[in-house]
Length: 340
Ligand SMILES: *Cc1c(COP(=O)(O)O)cnc(C)c1O
Image (cartoon, rainbow, N blue to C red):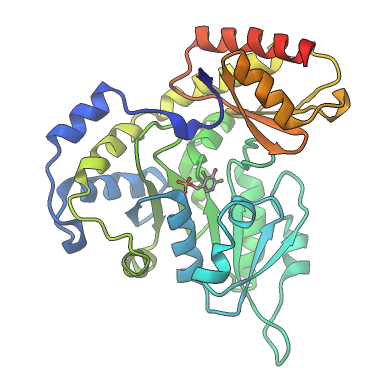
């Protein structure tokens, strides 16, 4: 099976397995795991933040960030297609006691004027805006790479109102790669960032939540509260250190996404969103098809993809997909569409 469902399916390579086998470990809840400490230090530097925390998943990193930045009963401002809105089980209500204010944005980022319009000041009747939430790359909008000036525009507008800003950067390094900027250019305007080691970077487990020293100190307590304090976590952090060195290889995944999109260009009736990173969205509504039926056909031909909604299919390239796999996938997908 050529698995293009997600970049989360990547498996650790030999180097990562060897790093895990030989990792120095200690009890990380006591702060005594040298490998985790090393990872946190390097990860903080990679995103230009003072400190970082290793967390079991991107979802936990996001939920911790929301809780630490806000007070219960506040509002969180987010694009309506944000991962935290669509795919985190309504966790913001449960873990942080937040109300969401979601709205439609261009490319998944609010303009400064939208931040101003949606901002709510506290009074006797109204909650207060507690956090502006950004996402980069923007997953559900097709892996869009959001440029530094768009991030800064939204973040500056929020900061003017005294509102902190978090970036869900699950695929932050894909964005930096696509835009040919450094990850720190994308995080400089914001207060905290989460990124996943376990997606395109290829680590088996884990994400990073980074911000100021004070933010990370509170985040560390909240991670414990959520049951995410891990003991000899160096075993899984060691492959995470290898993952940080894989950033330069993301460009190959992006090239594969472009090849896939180009290869499907002649399929009739489907609308392909030009990929900016490693995600290709294919809208099959024009061919009067439904996602589930297409996925079934693809599966029969040895390709796995995922359904973003009833008529949109998502293909995601990653480091376990070779050029040959990709070419085979293009052939299989073309045949599947011809015969669905
Ligand atoms: C995958 C993803 C997450 C969550 O990461 P997990 O490690 O799967 O919990 C959060 N935000 C975005 C944009 C993602 O793509």
